[in-house]
Length: 433
Image 1 (cartoon, rainbow, N blue to C red):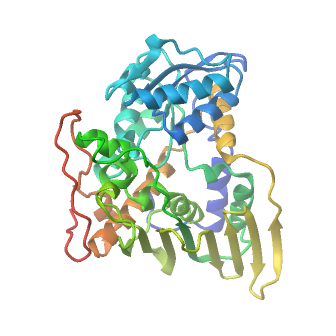
Image 2: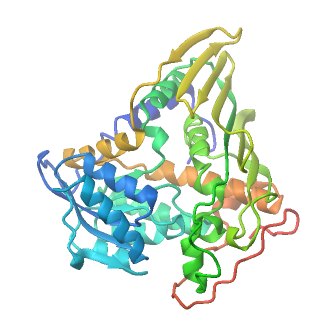
Image 3: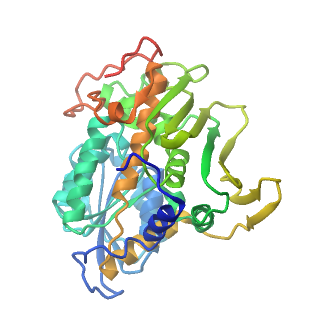
């Protein structure tokens, strides 16, 4: 990764290469495969987003076959699989012998004879599952983010390199990169529509609906099961909201800046409203300032508090104009310095989640598998870095974040293990590790 921001011309070239689906990649293990070749899919992590990804993978091509499914919990697997069977009657071929439950289900799916795996468990497990899948020679779709701590992210970077050596596809769930309107907007930014990019301000402000009303400390006595059932609310398993959800906004910020790392960041955050044992140890709001070379700055703000103003926006300020993106209504507007609209994108009917799977599976069949590995690692680390700054109250450099020894994810898992919840971070008291 370079320490200097790219020129507008360089950014355009890199963006065009990305949009082409890394067409210069070496042939995959399915070199020259015809469109009607069967691809066996292994689905690991049967939650809502995972089930959505499995639906999209099957819709991407009628010859994509769901071959094996795995989850830590049988009820999650059963509910997901029943829905998939109803929607894709002829494409689901998962007998009981290829339905795997437990902490080792992921390895059994990988070993079941699949060609492609969908990795959609809580993100703490992403580095482990990704490494095992690539070691076995499988193409991978990975839901965002890619890790919850720096050691895990470093493992992901190593696995990305191995995937490149094996010519394996790696498609990241940073879905905005596959949205047609977003792509067109970023191409225009790269072509100098607002001049030199000086500042970005992005927001991801939402409510805080209880995602797991069924599960609590009283009816889930085992530490690991309780925390996995409510994984979003524990830093080790979900990474906190800036890493798990607001990473989409940070990913767009990184895209605009050529996926080059910042020099440093400082941050604020806290936990004011969403409190109590069942909400683990995460914050409910963040505000981060990222400093890039050449006096370029990016500002991120995110919040998960009910009855507050929602916003999913990206504002870019350049030497010759501005660009405003409203993610909620898919609106894209570019203005000159006088405020005159120079370009406005009319939202089209397009499902970015489907587009990423359509392009991913098409690239595999064409022998030029997409590999989003480098950028997905950078965006994940940017999010982790921001959390570090907010948790500690310290200025965090890119090198500090990349080399952090803070390991949040347990080394081994056992249903009966004791897994105490660390205290909520206190800026100025919580140390950087």
